Image (cartoon, rainbow, N blue to C red; front, side):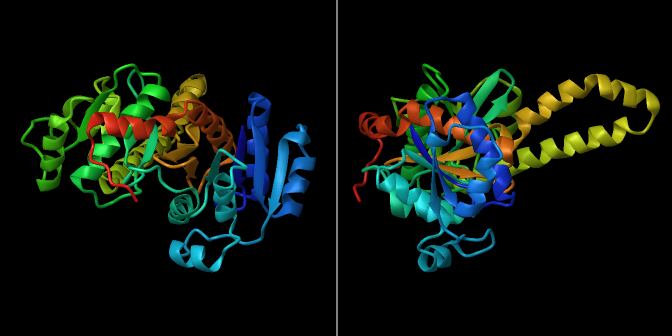
Length: 339
């Protein structure tokens, strides 16, 4: 499987990202990489590592859409930007999916303009996996569509169900609607409309409204559906809370010698907890409903994060989630619009 990786974008050094993806090569023999960025720098980074050079190709560019740059301006004026070249490789069937840890808006725009939507998909949502008390659940939309109609939300539910079945291997995923309470009457005008539509859908296992705290601390839901505005706020709140807890623990442990000794004994536990809550553990969010794989990384994606992103790209593409979405949208009765 060929995967295109934009190693020129993001906040971490190119060398760190290259070494991270090379570690993924050693863990999965079925992956071949096309690295997009400055050829000289990529070649130098590769020369420092033991790897199968036959499984690596390089596409050179010095153009990068910066993190604070307008995605529209970047796409318009930087035709050879690294994220665009990576997406174009999917369009041209040289790669099955692409990943970028750079400007999120530019990555989404590149996916839509170069890779394109599956017929019938109105708005591709970003889906991500998150930890819960007994495993993982998925949540969408995580920020691609901040304003949503009931038609969009219904499609998100169907696509989330397909993702949970094929990627998380859950036979009959439980679908919940993110809300401020679990009662049927809760929510604003929009969420009430979403709820009414979900109740009419017979092809999804809709369990009702789900509160943010319940989706984490209990095992009651497998797919959480929200508009991109609320979903992104929840994601960033979870990431910030996890980081705060780790910082507070470190601060408290350092206050006296006894707690320092206890902290040293608990270090493996703290490390495991931090790993599970870190964005590096899953590496990327996935844009569903496209004619290929599009994976959006965090700007702070580290070498470990990009390694996990590559491995999860393979897992997602191997599960053929997008290929099943069009059929599920039709069978579920979700409204379709052909573009």
